[in-house]
Length: 255
Image (spheres, helix red, strand yellow):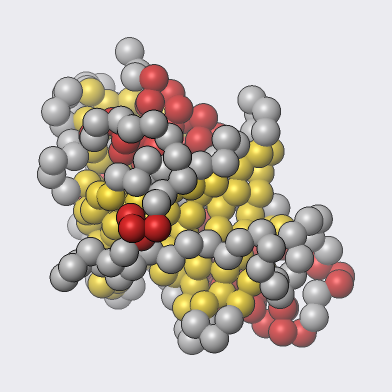
């Protein structure tokens, strides 16, 4: 029987068509003593010494955007806006494999970390470092959320999740996503996607890329209740092919 938080994980995935990782971000709170939900305090966004770079907050709604929030009109974008979108699309479509480390900041301020691997099309693994027992694996058809401590595994069809946006062979942010915002400064370019939830409300995903080469650096999930989960990736390798065994899911047993 899936836990309440695992069910919340599924709701997060199906609610946010732009987010490849909304599920494990929500599920990670199983691994720590739950705290009253709140926005992450400023102190929780400080850099972990000797580990990941500091997690930056996503652009505020009131920030000066390249493209204003609201319905996105591709016929009204400026040449600079079009160039930024092309750069993000080109990066997402050119990267076939990816591996590295991640740091996650949950809505209750809990910080966790681990390793990740991606192989397109459709394959992904996020493995949290102890004491968290969680793993999230996509094999191209299914998505498994494993809890090594409880010896449980919950399975979902990948088509029920928004993983297609980062794991698909190709993507066009204007045609394939609900792009509602595009922000930029000298350091980064951030695109904001929004999707209506089948259970009411909407959720947002802000993807932050380097302004220099459009490499993906961070994403923030804002759920229908307004709570943020931010994941920052670092030490990223886009050349080495991950071992295919990393993406194996045994669907006939719990683990």
